[in-house]
Length: 162
Image (cartoon, rainbow, N blue to C red; front, side):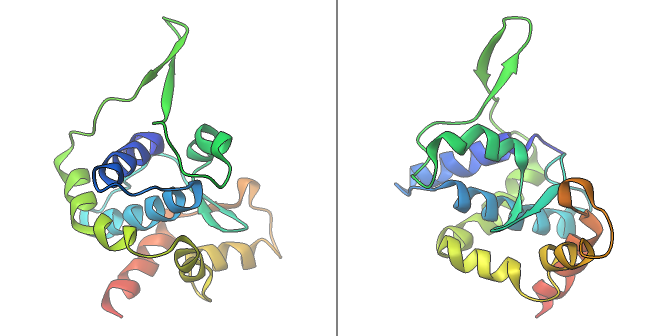
């Protein structure tokens, strides 16, 4: 499991190699789909923190916070982490985990080709983890509107076979 910002950086670096520009909404949705594939294929989460159900679909709050300064414009800088010893921000190391790299290499290309709001539409369909989390919140409290990994892997089992 990795800090979501580290995976977001990997997505950005690979997109930039292909001269593609990504916005916050692109990153959030691609990160979510890669996380789902990783859960299904490797039996463990790709990112440490849970996704949250926001208006435009699943969101990683730390990624949102790091990139919100770009608004709806293309992201032009990598996410950084705070180093409390040096009391400064520094870059995340490059991803070196073979399973995580495999997930990204296997699936990223197809998601880079799909427009961001098409990905939003996919996450909003009835029965998706996002829609189930939003529906459940109508009758019970879910602080942070967290989307459980169990819902994501269950959905991706059907998503892949459909």
